[in-house]
Amino acid sequence: MSKINALCVYCGSSPGTDPAFVETARTFGKILAENEIRLVYGGGSTGLMGALASAVLDHGGEVTGIIPEFLTKRERPRPREHAQELIVTRDMHERKRKMFDMADAFVALPGGIGTLEELVEQLTWLQLGRHKKPVLLANINGFWGPLIELIDHMQGLGFIHTERRFQYLTVDRIEDALPRLVEYWAAVQPALTLDQKKVIERL
Image (cartoon, rainbow, N blue to C red; front, side, top):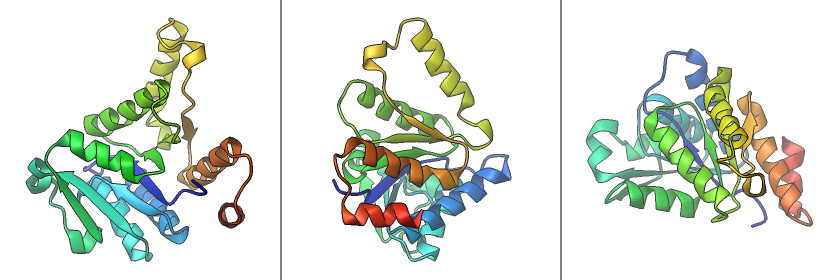
């Protein structure tokens, strides 16, 4: 892969109580659109999901929503308003697999149990060597701090072994997310392509 063409974002279908969360989602949507990176997300029209997808489309970007059939009534997907492409899957397992297959990298914004579950699955696959795609936690206002502390706690007690340490990324500002992801790819590839150099120069 020469560059990040599609990025999967896990985030809440609710806005949360901190206004910074929705603002972060909108800002990141704009960043993705301006850098011609397709958004792959959970397909919902509410909360951080809706704010993120709307921002991508408002700035001329491309969006693919992936949602299991049983969630279509609860999260009210609106294909014309929040995605050019909406994929309805049979269940959560198929949804997560399609999100993985379509994305070159993963970012976790604030969210609830569902966001956490999707994130932890990617971290597990990363630790087990099932993929090398970057996984980044957008630690907005310290949201992911307790999880980061728990992972360090697990490692300290010998449940995450050093030789199998997975290299997930963290940022405190959403503006730093894409540069960190691009930096990751620069480190794992022997040489940058012209397209990737242009992305770095824009950031």
